Image 1 (tube, rainbow, N blue to C red):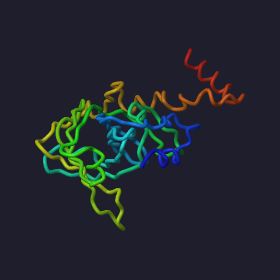
Image 2 (image 1 turned 120 degrees about the vertical axis):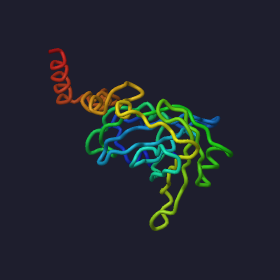
Image 3 (image 1 turned 180 degrees about the vertical axis):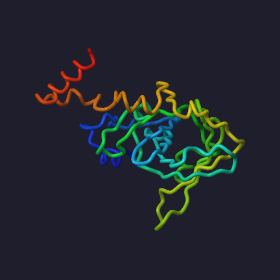
Length: 216
């Protein structure tokens, strides 16, 4: 899929999300994963697997299933750049996916049986996750969506039951230990990577006001 669709949907002069570096020519077996809690129009979880130099990504409307046999919808979305696994902050309102993003969980994974990319193309990924919160086996299976859509998947809990995070940990970043509210209030990632690009007098004036307020 690559990053073309990801870049098409975003204005990097207005969002601090990473634009992504050129893909490496050769990628040895990548094995990191990240789950980001994302309060956009609707709260959901973005499940991402490092593969082929990008993050293969799915949106989970209901989080991970934790009991064996449970299954939740997973909608495949555009690939994201590897740098996105560290993104936590606020996507500006009006931008694609505008809202608060938390690094909810991260760790390593491996795929049973075949190579990850081959399993992805065949529509079945039997995963073992070793994260801070998610530990155990899950399986992603492509299903036939409406009108033959190919981006509809299910994520199933396979293997043994997994222990869901406590209420406190469910709303805590594994990167900064912040809650969603604290991330939203801080707004530290919003505009951060683009501050040097906007040197208009109006923007400089607003920046001086913000700095003055912080010093009080």
